[in-house]
Length: 186
Image (cartoon, rainbow, N blue to C red; front, side, top):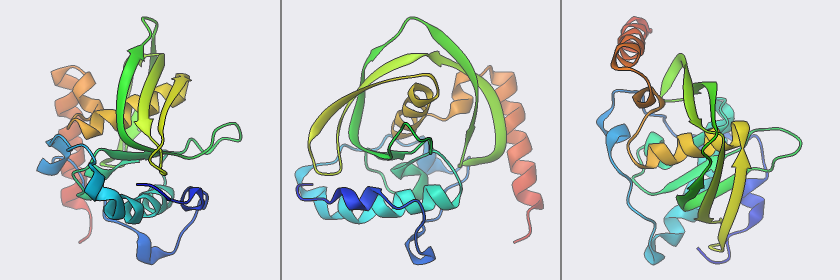
């Protein structure tokens, strides 16, 4: 992981050749727990990060986890695309603190295109992770940023945002998605 340029994180658009295919629920790989990145994974992660960002921006989205593009590693990218937040690459992220204060906001997911629901999560979070250069960092976030971090880390554990809903709401969304995917031109 050492020596990875932060320039990999800067572009908010990229050539189409770098785009990855995003898995759509109920694909089984979305339910698998991703394995931690290890020392020997540096080249894979260096090649993956710019492609994750490019795919996320093209979708468009504000977060994307490696399992969503068929890579079973604990890697995710987030960019709220707001002036006060920079793009962030998270390698082996772990939530180390959550607030008791909860917030409910509408969530969607690139792996459940066109599906949205109100999800309640802790409003503040502290996450420990390795950055693109392999440096251990901690970040505190609140509001949308906190929700996005929790959403992407959930992906690394095989959890989708619909898993935070009642069984009835979850099943309605998954049935609607399946119907829309069947009707989609091939």
